[in-house]
Image 1 (cartoon, helix red, strand yellow):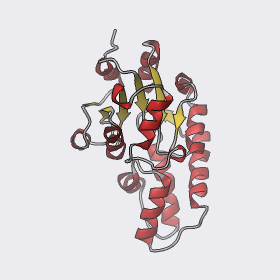
Image 2: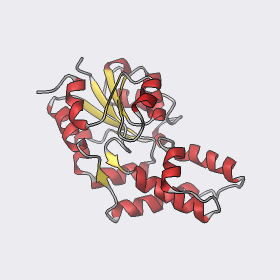
Image 3: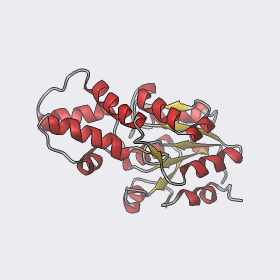
Length: 219
């Protein structure tokens, strides 16, 4: 069925930013005495908001991080984006443009912070199709896996969550979309399809070329 709105996650779905963000976290934590690779950081933190990352790091390291640690990490990540280390996920622009051409309202609901999300929006031109409907964890009381972000995104689109489709690539995000009452499609780009199915997604796909068909808007 054609959805009333399509609610996209950002990192790993639209922006190829997971390696940059998790690489930055790994660099910082290695400097602080917790040796970590980008791959380990991705496995540990994928889909997680900064406040939740702080809690995990504190528990694992057994030390209190500086109060401005989130700001330090965001500055490191944003600096890399602005230096040219940000690309779109292959096929993401075409998928977004297809949804826009079908006249379906879209929003982004991301567990990243406001500065990160705005930087991505400024660097990836196809974000113009979201018309400012960009939500981050700072805009709601609770981040993913709670449903708050997707409930807020649906409201921003003037739609009931049950009439919306969520596009997610992480188990954390998929659980958030399911909890919000949305139909969730799992983009099995890095997360195994079985993990997404176990999180409750209605279907999985591995290429954005498949998305128009799954949304009922293929020409």
